[in-house]
Length: 307
Image (cartoon, rainbow, N blue to C red):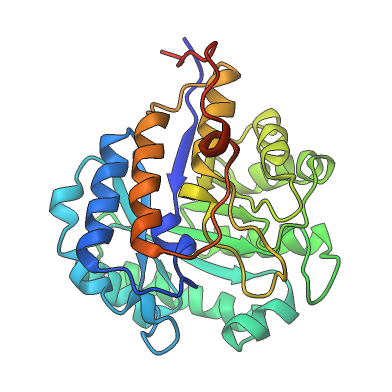
């Protein structure tokens, strides 16, 4: 039996949050449906941030109305605070992702609050989940800038572990170790992930890598060797952090799926179907920064999917 690896598609959230074009809600729905048809089983569909902050997600509630059509995948939503979490659950989401920054400088620049205040907001979200009896709501928590920060520089791994422990104690169902600005390298990933997995205590650990300096896929391999089997990826490598100058975006879904299948891991993803979808997305979004070697060179004749 081949080992299964899950690619959680974040193009519809992280990928387009800074796009110049507002993508029509129907196109977002069609994008998600095409992902499911291509074999993607987890999608971060939208974000419940205030529209004045990120106009791209002004239609989060309308998009949530399509959740019954997207039953072939686990659809999650990013929430910035308690109010966002309440909106997401009321709209029908049963998997929400909350992100806090390990780096104080990044936290202040990104959400105008300290890491400690962000942790306190998580406590409020989990307490609301407990008191309101939200049915089977999974709470994922992203540990942004776990591997370094463009504003602060180095991030002490011990601080990452300390925040991770607090997050687990406050009810996180899964941890997302995020290389938000593309500073991670494989040695660093191998050194840190075993401890994060230990702290998670059986909870799922997800890795969120960016390809800012060309090490995204190398970091995926290092994470695989460390015991992680779930990764955030973005169609066409769309997205990135506004505090990472020159960033090339998230790791590319097509390239990641190709690498994993070539290595003997099963993703269940039809790469040709992704490439077809990519062409549609490019026509919808227009002049954005797209990346990916498979889109440029195609699949090799020797390529075979893992069963």
